[in-house]
Amino acid sequence: MNNSKLKRIFLSPPHMSGEEIKFVQEAFESNYIAPVGPQIDAFEREFCKITGMPYAVAVSSGTAAIHLALNILEIGRNDIVLASALTFIGSVSPVVFLGATPVFIDSDPLSWNMDTGLLADELKSLNKQGTLPKAVIPTDLYGQCVDMDRILKVCEPYGVPVVIDSAESLGATYKGKGAGTGAKASVYSFNGNKIITTSGGGMLASDDKKLIEQARFLSQQAKDNTPHYEHSQIGYNYRMSNVLAAIGRGQLTILKKRIEKKRWILNRYKKMLGDISGIDFKPEMNYGRSNCWLTVILITPDKFGADSEKIRITLEKENIESRPVWKPMHVQPVFKGCKIRGGKVSEDLFQRGLCLPSGTQMTEKDIERIVKIIKNCADKS
Ligand SMILES: Cc1ncc(COP(=O)(O)O)c(C=O)c1O
Image 1 (cartoon, rainbow, N blue to C red):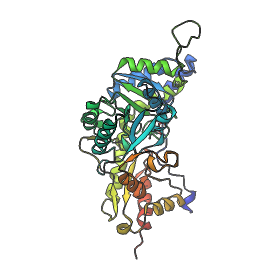
Image 2 (image 1 turned 90 degrees about the horizontal axis):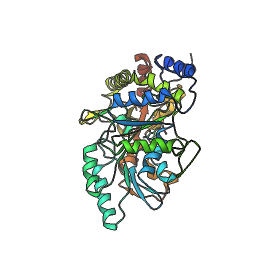
Image 3 (image 1 turned 135 degrees about the vertical axis):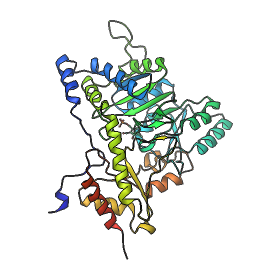
Image 4 (image 1 turned 60 degrees about the vertical axis):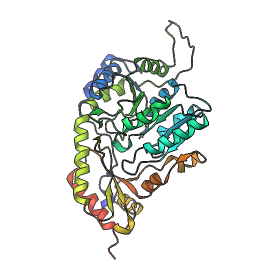
């Protein structure tokens, strides 16, 4: 049988548990097929309970959540925002929506997250020029939290707020606390590929009640508290749908299970590929627990006998999806000319990094098959 005819193995597809449907049914029965309703309120409450975040507002995407947070921090034209170089564009595009300028900070070679030494250098330099950034948005990359204490220590003397992009790290921990803790505002994504999903959606959380109230107001077209439609400010249509919140409630109930399975997948790959020369795994920092959203490997072609692109193409021929590590923001055509501090680490991670299929419905057999294909890519000559 031609393997390419086998069912496609996706990188990280949605995985419904069966728990979602009863909440969706409730949403239908209540007729709240709208961006308002009891499922949204319950989803926010249950999210806060699980993550330990005091306040949260459910919105249409992680990108929308970042946009709202930056808006509330009054970021606008001529402002600078520091962001991770190695991230997804949704982390940075809201900076541009607001007319501000992103400045990128390279990755730390160990954690792959924003390099706090380079962040300190950039803040020092900007302070000298009298152009301090209005915010810093580090990304918890591939499910591993940033070293938040270090980041806060570097930012606090300058009074620069931190918005943490925890889009990929829901359920991960940092020093025993949930991903996102400690920042001025924290952003999560429920996009279809995330550890839990609402098909599309996001959450903005904070321990600042007023910030979340303001975000809720802005996410619903900034409608003043009057019986007619009165607007003193421009807002957005960013509220999550009650139907999607129902899916989210079901997904929250199995978040722990999903994290366990993701770690199992990582450990299976490690067991089968860990001893191979030229293959390294994304390191896990000892200050926390990753949610293992994606298993990511680094290929050293000279040692392994093939590069990451050859592996990706070979897997694709077998109907298996893998992906290069995020292409850094400072080498994206759209950010040509933007400033980068450092840059070589994230460029190297992009060149050599490969995200392996990490869907939580994968079986031992699937992983064995993937591993066999990867091993066969190596040029034995
Ligand atoms: C690091 C990062 N930031 C932001 C986002 C944007 O989230 P969304 O797709 O929900 O807008 C994503 C994922 O999609 C992401 O991976």
